[in-house]
Structure formats: C-alpha cells, structure tokens
Image 1 (cartoon, rainbow, N blue to C red):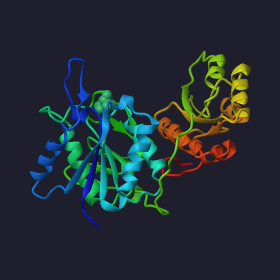
Image 2 (image 1 turned 180 degrees about the vertical axis):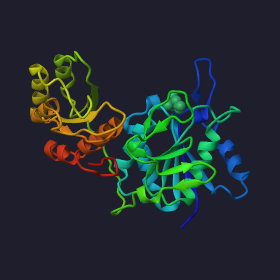
Image 3 (image 1 turned 30 degrees about the vertical axis):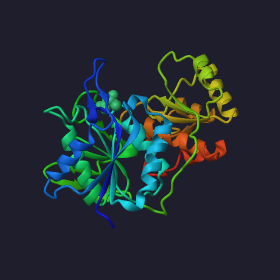
Image 4 (image 1 turned 180 degrees about the horizontal axis):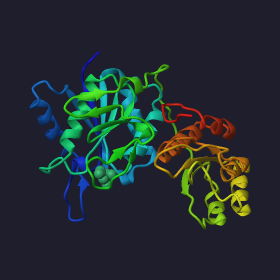
Length: 335
Ligand code: ASP
C-alpha cells in the first residue's frame, strides 16, 4: 500500500490570514507552506497530496453537509492513501470528528482531524506541530479510526470536546483515555485503539433533524414544546448529574411524552464533564426514562447529536434509533 497521506483542508485558523474583519481562510494559501514543511523534513514526514474544499470555511459555518462532503472525499480516496489528515477549525472540530466516525463506519485507516489556535503563518503558531504530529500518526501509527490531534494528545474523535477557547491544549476526552501522547515520542496506547470490526462503509444522504437542549433550573416546558416540532426528529437533552431533570414538573414530563409520541427520539446525556448517565440512580432520572427518553450513558453531547443525526438520516424507525443510541457503534459509548 502507498505510504502517502491525503491532507484535506477544510478551513479554520490553521490556514487563515488577517482581513479587516478578522481572521478568515483564503483558498490556495496553505498548500505551498505545507509542501515546504514536508519537503524540508528530509523523510521524517510522509509524502502528501493536498486537497481543499471549496469554499474553505470557518468551522462555525460547518453544517451536516460539510460532514458528508468530507466523509465522501475520504471514502472515495480510501484505497489510495495510508492515512488522512483533515485540517479543520477548532470551534466545531469535535462535531466533525464525531460525525465522521459515524459516517465512515469501520474505515480502517487513520483519519486525523487537526487544526490550530494560531494561524500557521505566525511565528508562535501551534499549527506546525499539530500538522506534523497528525502526518506522522496518519502515516506511521496503527490508529485505524477517526481521531483528533491537538497539542500533546491524540484523542478518539467521538470522545473529544473543546475545553479551551484560546489555550493550545484545547481538547480533552474526559471519559476515555487518550489514544496517544504526542511528546518527545508519539506513544500510542494500543490497548485503547479501536480496530475495524467489519468492512468499511459510507453513510450517504441527508442527516436527520436534531437539536440539543441544556436543562437549567427554571427551564420552561413550553420552550421544550416549541423545540419539539417538525422538522425535529431527535433531541439531545443535556441533563444534570447522572441524567436527572425536574421530575416534579408535570408539564416538562408531558412535553417529553408528547415528543416521544411524535416519534422524536429523546436522548439524555449529562452536563458534567466526567461520568455517565445512570438510569435509575435517582427518581429524578427515572422520571425522564418513564416519559420515554433513553439514556445516552457517557456519550459527549457532540457524539450524541451527530450519531442521532446520522441514524435518523437513514430512515430507521424511531424505536430502532432509540435502541441504537444506547449501544456502542464506533467507540463513542461505554456502559
Ligand atoms: N473560528 C475558527 C474555526 O473554528 C477557530 C479555530 O479554528 O481555532 O474555524
């Protein structure tokens, strides 16, 4: 097999330049720079081919169509490359890395999503280090899953979350060990890497209509009722602690029941950074389940939302999706 890596540039700070209204991506600006980094590495970096989407975006503008476009490109070129690096903005990087893990089941090649907090053209940029680490993982490490490399860690893509708006170690996966430490050496923790369990696939088509809502004391049931209307098909409810909500609020529970009766899949995740939803631990959590919600256990909100969108987009029945949301598909959930 080729030892070449495909670098797919989608936008984000790493390739941005200053404009009068702030940093923005510019087509064609990054390729020569990356070529010179690879050429100057004297074989320490793999040969690459470079591709960029049109238009490049600030990842705040990413949509499910962006995820599908990236997945389609990676799948189409799967056989030609040893691995893939996706350059992406940090703002929604964890959504994209989660979505790719569901859109590209059992991909069987490293897909390393990375970017930077400082444009690569600036002298103190973190972009060069992140890029170099991502290229080395993509070409030379046995990490055949969608991962996210940032700062000193390589994380599972569907376990990662952005935890820092400006720090250079901007991502963590608080509920799953890092796949590798990016330090003097790249130390892969082979025991936590997910190997493909089936033939590779590509999920195509539109994704389902989903939303995420965070509970807070005083949350109004009528807001929930207004959210749970067509075209909504799936709702991620970011609940308290082990998956609790206002169990003495009849209107709130009725809004969940009404949503479920309309075949809206309601998945409960926790607002906490660590830990898992534990159905039955508290009456205030059981009430949500009795109303028809299902536990998302230790999934991040990003993973739950993108998984729900991908499953619902496949035209499966709500009951089947609700069941699949409680089981691991791509390493996103432990129970
Ligand atoms: N707004 C930028 C983006 O997500 C931030 C970044 O890349 O760090 O595209």
